[in-house]
Length: 156
Image (cartoon, rainbow, N blue to C red):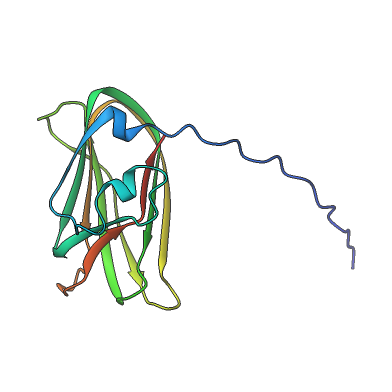
């Protein structure tokens, strides 16, 4: 048998990403929020507790940018520690405030606490002149009483 040891190589650290200042660049619209877990918790760095919907059912978070922006990365972090469920998320965008929306991704993820509690998604995109970015969350595709949650939404 021929064999050779692979020498470990040092990996250069990834530089801090330049995230868009969503708070300063956009107006956020949403279908609901739990007063203890407002939308700022997911969109503004430094907040400890993300966003949570006020009730069950589909939820929409829409960012309307004051001026068109370029987006190359959409990062989502969703943590579900309580309820076993299958969630569906959809991201869409538009160049116009009232224009047609174009789908970026539609995906399902199954949470099964305590083993499977975290969904982290990095979507590499090349979106130019974005005026509207919309996240739709169906917290339980079986129609259960789970509430949508979003720990972080970051854009670069």
